[in-house]
Image 1 (cartoon, rainbow, N blue to C red):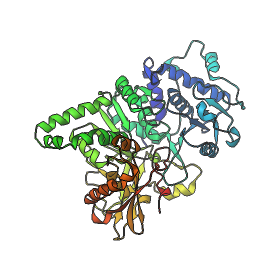
Image 2: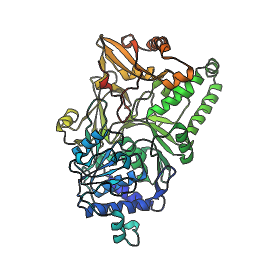
Image 3: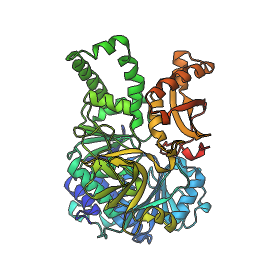
Image 4: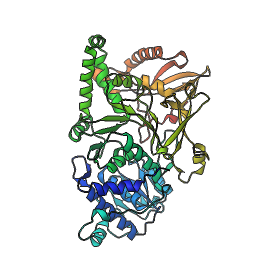
Length: 545
């Protein structure tokens, strides 16, 4: 195991950055590191007063906010286990997760709480508001953290008085209930060590410094956002501004301009939209195509485009990291061509979350970086450079297993500690990883060759009138279900009756870029958006023939 300790990271940052800003909600009042320390201490007194023990489970449901972050830090630094739950889960799913996780306390946003029934959450003692820490229900607990803090520290608390309990590195810190695309949600058990390993790697390899501003857009109930939009920057002494809800693009652009973050984390969708909706209509014009072929002049144009896109994100970032899904190859090629400082990482909840990363100036096209220094990675293949196999990982980042689900754990985690990721890929001689698709979505074609639908969908989704797609096999042929972009249709005056002709042209053009064995036989219209998980991944299993 690594030498670094998660609670030491948190405790040191509070002490060392006592007088500077730690958190704020967008356009809200900031919390200094000292105020965060006071709130954590008050919650510790509250937990102790009411018999919460080390290892007890405490659930947390709300959108991103400064209070969410404070509650998370208070729970894990007390030695309890945080159970972050996505606020857009259904009430039934939330009831099941709270019961299954054995949570004793619940911190919930008030709008979510109104949809819940405490009688359907077995074992829950009481619930509290994320907004102001007040009681949401009359339970067995009657004390108040603020009163307890004032009683013990009438003159306030000093940095040297911030002292967290010692935890074993393999002690449980988080149970993260995944929203996988293939079925029932499982509780991923993440230890203090797995979180510390991710924070350690980020300290050594990602371009952030103490005091840097961060704009947190990713959902911090997901491990990707939790660690890299919140936990890692906090341990460095950064000021993190939380967007408390998904904003419109103009509001998001304004927030980036105001905060001017130094590091940006995104899922690829936003960058793909910028490419598809803003850049492609310009660079595909006949005159622009000609100008981009002229040496020297094309570099001036690329530099201008780079500057304009950078300005969308505040213009002061050192790197933009994409993760959580594959990045469209056409978009990636263009952003690399204009030398935009982005990179693509790879991870999963079961690794808390990072598996691989490379800085933007060492990023290889179509790859997702190299294995982090706390993991071993191998491909379950006789020829990992040329024959696709399942990606397997082992090391500090890997989960302890699925909570109360030995059967599911044994399916993915063997006795030697190797985790089967469910992702298929290759690894080259330099160690760069190339993901080809998900094991469960791979299609075995009539010719016996493997087909990875995600790669085909990536090409389809760049087309102007297409919002999203899913490729399936039907009668030994590949069929693409297409959801049209209704907004683009209105803009261009396209009627639904026109789509069959347009989509047939798309199909023929796309097939010219694909090998014969992965040619698409037919585009089928799917008017409604595909059903998705809270992570906005398509529930692929719902559409398999």
